[in-house]
Length: 335
Image: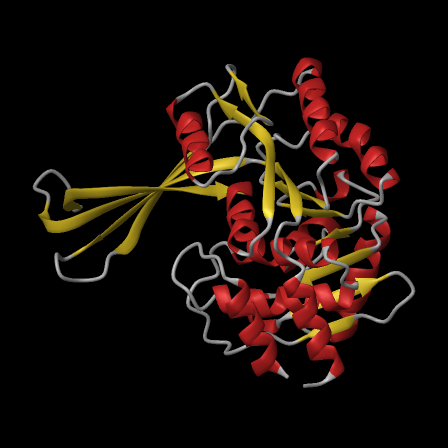
């Protein structure tokens, strides 16, 4: 067993009991299963016999579940509506023993719901045929921002790191961010960001984890296959967000880590390129990256562990998590 391998395994051993604040958009993922019957007479569509429904945490909730599965203690901070979906999110958190005292209820918004309809013959594996999104942005007002600031300040006392998961529903508000950023930085608490569309609005953080399309959107360019183009784009984005590091995820092409004053570090995908399902892989990557940094890892070590984790979950169907044992085995096999 080489020194690098042992170092990565020791970082994983530090995961349990680490308290990670997860600030972001909590979404209710609803999976509705049905059995196909016949074609409707009213229109050329399938008639489904409705079966059971399953509910899961989505959005920032998926990052939270990844941390939970790895033995950490996630502390959710966010906003839900005063509705059934918001109550169900709180119920899921309560069932897992995760406190929801910093999840605020806002009467003027609805909790986002993503309903996936899966169908197939009675004895066949069900396939997703439709997704229905109920979107609602959190209102930006001073009263709510102050409540978020208060919650984040209280959560800071327990935090080993702050993970920001912005799905563009505005639970992550720029004013609140500007107020809590110096407080967390003063305590030397790592801040990791995954933002769907607003990465340029949250600067001076520790690390950000955009995927390739998100990096392209931020820079208003189209990345090409040439390594020098990716390298230049990564350096430019790193300067723009004034972060200490940037990890661009590239699907089957792996990842590239950028740090100030260092050459880009390319990481090939762990495992096969025959990916089963990319759903939620970005949430796994930032969860492991954040947890590793909270456990004393360097950016390079944290990125390597995040890459192993991403390679594991993309081989699972649907939104998935992984265990410390799976991650340890991947490290052993990967060296």
